[in-house]
Length: 335
Image (cartoon, rainbow, N blue to C red; front, side, top):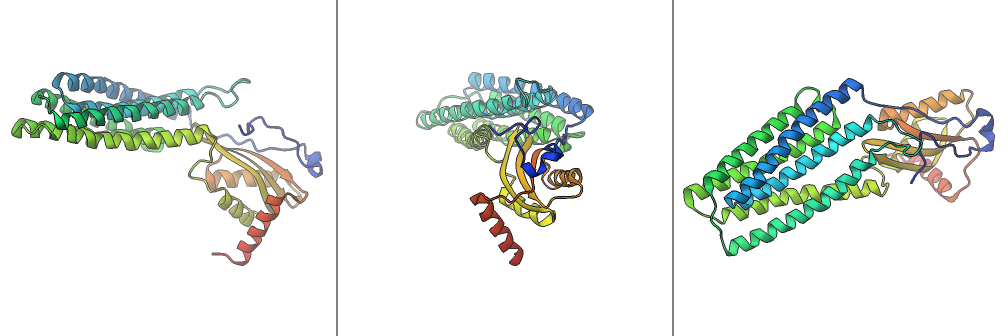
């Protein structure tokens, strides 16, 4: 795992030893009021969604509707997403300690990974059952199916209102959870359509057909969740960052910066963390340059936790020479 940017003390170049090996220590944390408001909205939406997930699961079993069971599986994805968002808000408020220097945010990623595996398993089971029902349709209680589907739609509307109202659009957890719930509205509408078709035409294959369509939504969400959570568990670079572009732009926009190397960028929870070595022209104001680099990372990349090792000697390693050649080429032939 990369070094902890809050507590890393790797040796610095000998030429800057008299500066005491300064490091970047910017911290960006949401306000307590924002955390409390987000937690209340998430908790309310979680209770509503979890309750109606159980209602749909029981209703699907009693009515014999596979579409309702598939929609309950989709609501399970929403419930899991809301739970992970709740955990993120809760654990973000816990102070790190000597044994857990990043706190407990990684638990949400592990929960997402396990949740994704469960979702893929559920999807396979629903599609398997749907294939059997195409061959041997089973009787379905249309009115029971309709009432449960309408209740599920109302629950999704309430959950979306809770997540999207107030300051929800400013909180990334609330926005992500709202998108999950918005997607689940399609599942509830699909179950209602299936119930109407069964009530007025008696065509039973519509139930497994729509259950497969809803399962495709679950499969898409589950696969994306599996891929993203595994990438984070493997300490991969967050998808929104291009390290090579970051190097070029920082070298071009901060004149004292000559070379950037040994870059590590990863994410814990929602927080991007970074360590990097920066070869610079010896400045008159060491701390001022350090703060300018910090401010640049925060303003342009929203990286509030960065460990910056400033070096005055030329980096002679192969990858540094290659990078410097690329920077010079870009400077002479800009796009």
